[in-house]
Structure formats: C-alpha cells, structure tokens
Image (cartoon, rainbow, N blue to C red; front, side, top):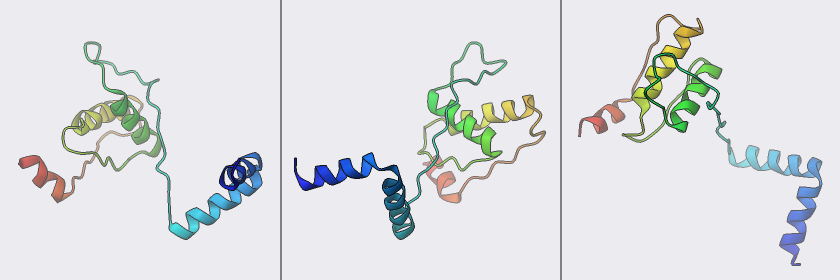
Length: 113
C-alpha cells in the first residue's frame, strides 16, 4: 500500500482530522458544495396524467425548503415546469399567494435563439 492510499485511509478513519482538513480546504479555496434536494415524496393535485422528472421534483423541493431558489440550468431542462409546479405547491401549502420569477437577461437572450 503506497503512502497516498495509507494517508487517505488514515484521514477517513479519523473523523476529527477529516473535518479539520475539509474545513481548511473549503476556507482556503472558497469551495462550497451546493445542497442536494430530494423531491420524490412530493405529490401534485392536477398532474395525474403527467409525471415530472426527478430533477424537477428536486428543484421544487429546494424551492419549498428555502422559499426560493436560484435554478441554474441550461435551456431545455424544464425550468418553466419546475417553476409552475413549485408555484402550485407553494399555494397549496399556503406558503405563498403570489410568486415572482426573475430571469437573467443572458438566459432570455439564449432562449430567443
């Protein structure tokens, strides 16, 4: 077993050291992990004949959890449907009566091509 493998195993076997190394790394390189949301548990009234993709459910879960979310996806990934079902769910849960959506000009320009 080489030194690299042994060091990796040593760090993984010691949670305190692992946490300390991660903290130093993230602070030094300003590396931040995006949270991962799971929307598999969500159901939508009125969508009986349509099943949203998992990433659309996950986007909705993120919006519900944070009461808003930057949805940074490429054109064609179903952002509009994600926003629509999120608005439906926010209203259904009584979290929001009116929703506001913002788009960056670059995305609007891309969408027109």
